[in-house]
Amino acid sequence: MRDEHAAALRAFRLIARYGSFTRAAAELEVTPSALSQTLKQLEASVGVRLLHRTTRQVGLTEAGTDFLARITPALNEIDAAMEALRQHGERPAGTLRVTMPQNLLDWLIGPVLVEFLRAYPDVKLEVLCDSRLIDLVAEGFDVGIRLGERLARDVVAVPLGDKVRAVVIGSPAYFAKYGRPQHPRDLEQHACVRYRYVGSGAIYRWEFAHRSGASRGQWFDMDVDGPITTNEPAIGIHAALEGLALMHAVEPMVRKAIAAGHLETVLDPWLPPFDGFYLYYPSRFQVPPKLRVFIDFLRERLANTL
Image (cartoon, rainbow, N blue to C red; front, top):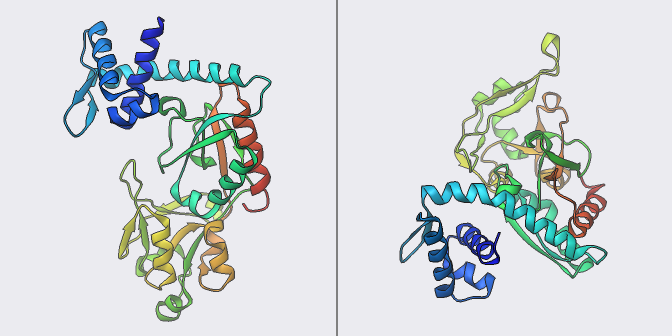
């Protein structure tokens, strides 16, 4: 690969990521006009238009989308190899791109990231929040954090703690007014917070496990109804605290509110522990120092939290 081709491919990947010549040019420390010329030369060399350009936005053509999907894994491999080579025998350094759900950042990871940056000043973090299960290689991330049950098989998964439980929560005022469900099917008579996945748009079906009999331990799910649907758990927690509805949540997220008596749990026997949160990264990548210290730091800090 000639140097000018490599630079053009990286420029194209960056423009596609940001959807903007201006932002990509700023990161590459070139002018937008110079970057535009680079892309025109790339399109001329392949004989296909890769980008739709308007005065307000930049988008990929169909050919551009296919091209990006094919070059991204190779570019990421090259970048990872170069980064590992630069860091060989050196202190952890460079930019670490991390993906995690917003609610996990808010109630657990955020303060730890501040501590990490103080401990490793030569490492920069780029944290993007998304509830989707991200393809790290395709989207240019170094590491992600998700529940273990959602991880693909071709990744290295490092547990951040023990198993966790889900809980159904409501305020004392709600239960005083509407009663406490004794069985998951009783939720049909209660107002519940509904969660919508960002990527698919699907509504999360509340999950439970049978308590006894031939189906003991087997999971089942059910739809619920209520006055609010959201993709942000913090909104649901607020609705539960205000006595508006019940919510299905991961227990560590609401542990303090439960301990303080602001929220109470119901249906606990129907909610056994399941795989907790994991750090995951591509299995074929050499682990650079910046990622290794990040993994070790989070595991140490979160060992007694999850």
